Image 1 (cartoon, rainbow, N blue to C red):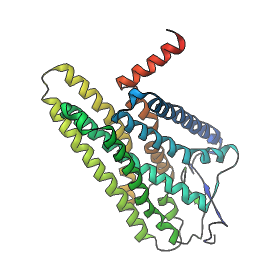
Image 2 (tube, rainbow, N blue to C red):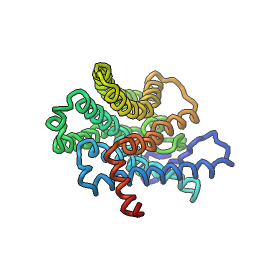
Image 3 (cartoon, rainbow, N blue to C red):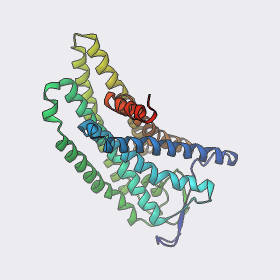
Image 4 (cartoon, rainbow, N blue to C red):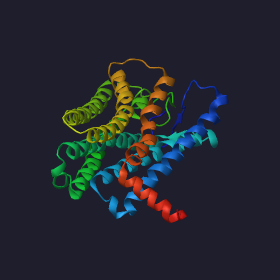
Length: 311
């Protein structure tokens, strides 16, 4: 391949080791995943935007998380599904770079929103009397906006890949374009770029994870000090659901980053499985965990159904 973006294409492989007879089944499964994400995250966004009573800090954070998840799925999944349905697995160099940028941008945004939500739970449980003065509507909007802008700018670091020539092969061993898979296809020394991007990713994940762990550690200590069982159960139930999302998001992602950093060779199929695990499973779980377990949203949904069906 000549290194000219308009003249060559990459080919998305998905699971390179999957037998061809399972292609349609796998693509249909991903189609279902995308549609569930589209309906669930889209419904959450519309519900929070349309219902004024949900214009509160926590729901603003949830709406930002839902939009980020839906945007990521829309950037990555339709092209991959098209590979099997209309033989659309070819992706141009420019399309691949754009997809990789937005993929890293949106994946990098999620930990900041999760960190903000952990801070919200910390204030709500540990400083309930000061919650309305600390976590305000304006402060939440400003914080979310700053995180979107900050991550968008920092993710520009991934464009360092543009300085490398690509001379084949052109197989992307993944569901979508990302920097780590593209760097494997470059035909010069990519170690400085690779280490810079991996270091940035690890620092981002570890910093946000450290803040989240600290927040929940303080919350646990506060819960332990509660003298009434109802407060204990309610606070613990809220935190447990959040911990599930954190585990789904952070554990496989950190494993992949550390494996790449220490140059541990993972099989292509296992690597794609991990990408599936940390990229899409949290997006399916978020609406269920953050919304259906939130009393105000459950009441709002119940009221909508009562008005709709007259029950």
